[in-house]
Image (cartoon, rainbow, N blue to C red; front, side):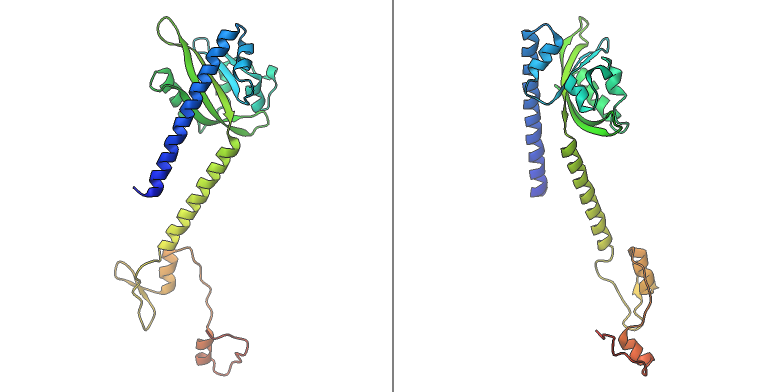
Length: 243
């Protein structure tokens, strides 16, 4: 494994450790908030004081959800424009992200992961999509041992995610460009007389035909100054450069 890949892996591990630390901190804040007040909204405001995250509190049995004012504001809504139903979040999920979101959520609900963690897009009031980091944790269970109360927060990561995706796009374009350049690299047998090229199957092809098959180059035919002198010796070539 290259040093670059090792460094990249180490960076990802460090980011994961930091994310776990942040989730534990969030869980501590939420627990402290619940003990300070019986009023749900007041407790969440206390928990996230000074933080720009949007808070949610989901009853996994009734599917009732408390969405904080900041949660709604991030999507362009005021407080009374979104009801306390899980469907308000579900219907705003980007279709391409839905499968991964529910996989990560169900993994946590089934006890496979200590926290729920996912990056996905949510539909805003103006029709655009916002990239958010969604994190949560089960805080209580039913008498049957099923998840009852799940709480968490949304963080706006749109700028970072857009930059990340643009970087991935540029890397892909560069890789594709390098692949095309490499198509014509290596040893090419060419006839010293007619200039035909022999392909990997042993057939001789005109140079235009060979290059066309192995690249996106297009040809326009002309006569160079040296050949013009031979074919048309009387032609004035004062303005032509003979390389």
